[in-house]
Length: 333
Image (cartoon, rainbow, N blue to C red; front, side):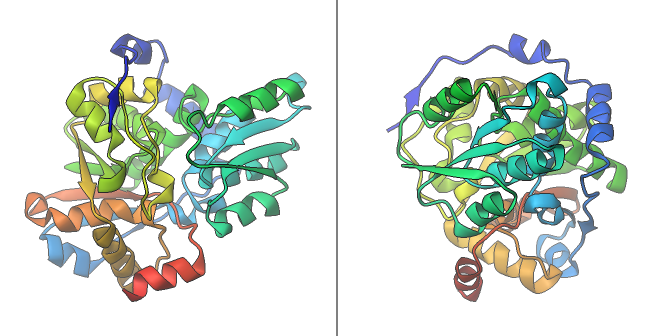
C-alpha cells in the first residue's frame, strides 16, 4: 500500500543556489581526492540498442561509488571548529563507506548506522576506513531517528545521504565531469533512490545541456519516485525488497523531489531479471563488476531498446560494491 504525503514546493529548490558555478566550486573542493572516472563504451551494447551508449563508471570512484563525491564535499565544508566530534550517517552501505573514508581523510571520527542485512562488502568498507558500525532493522519506520539522536548526543554533524545541499553539489559533479568528457547527449539515465544523485545531475544538465532528456531509473520493486511523479506529491511505499539494495528506499526526499519533479522528464523501472542481465553484460563486455543498483540503468535500457535507436545516451553506473558470492550467483544466471 502506498501513502501520499505533502511535499515541499518547487520554491524550496530555488533557494538552494544550485548554479553551475556552485557545482564547479564543489568539483574544485573534491578534486584533490576524487577520481575522474572513465567513460566506457561497448560495441555489443550499441548494437543491441542501435544507439551510442556512454557509460560513466562510478564503480571506479573511491569507496566504490559516486557517493564519495557528495560525502567528501559535505565533510570538507564542515568548519574546522566543528570537526572534533565527527560525523554520523545512516546508509544502506555506499553512503556510509563514503562518509567513513572521507572522515578518515579529513581526520574525523565517523559513526554509521546500517541495516542489519546490509551487504557484507559494504559494511567491511565502512569498518576498513575506521567507521563505527551500528546496525538496525531495515523495516524500522524512521531510520533517521536513532542516528540523529546519536549525532546530537555526540555533538557531531549528521550527514544525510541525499537531503543536503553539500551532498547534492558533490553528487552533481558526476554529470559535470560526464558532460566535459563526452559533450552533447540526447538522454542521461541515472539510478534513483533518495534522489540526490539525480538532483545534482539534473541541475547540472539543465544548465549545460538543456536539450538532454533526464531519465530516472528504479527497480520495479522500489518505484517510490515513479509513484510520486504520477501522484504529483511524495508517496511512501512499503519497505521494498530488491537485489538493488542501494535503491531500496520507501520515498524520495522532500528537497530532492522538488528539484527532480521540476527537471526530470520521466522515471522508468526495470525488473530484477533485467538488472541481473545487465550485470552480466557489463561484466562480459566491459570487464566491470557493477552492483545491482548501478546496473539498473542498463537493465532499463535493454528492456526499452526500441526507444533509443539512433540516439546518443549517457548512463551513470553508480557503484560496484557487491559481495563476490552474490555477484557470481547473479552473473551466472
